[in-house]
Image (cartoon, rainbow, N blue to C red; front, side, top):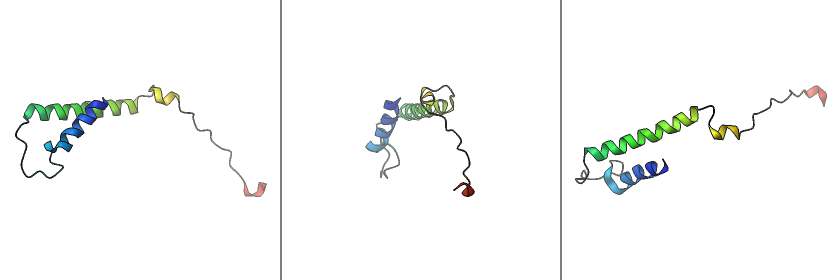
Length: 77
């Protein structure tokens, strides 16, 4: 999945996107390349959103739940 994110960024950085102000559109890419990049980005985003929403995600088990602290009183000092 990391390769997908890097690959899509590489396409943009190499001047195949509109983000770097190219004077003319690249001629060596077709619709299938655009569809591949868009679908790869959608797949990556969906995986990230699904992982964040998964209550059984492995990284959640490592977290230590916060314990509420007892209120402190200024009169106790």
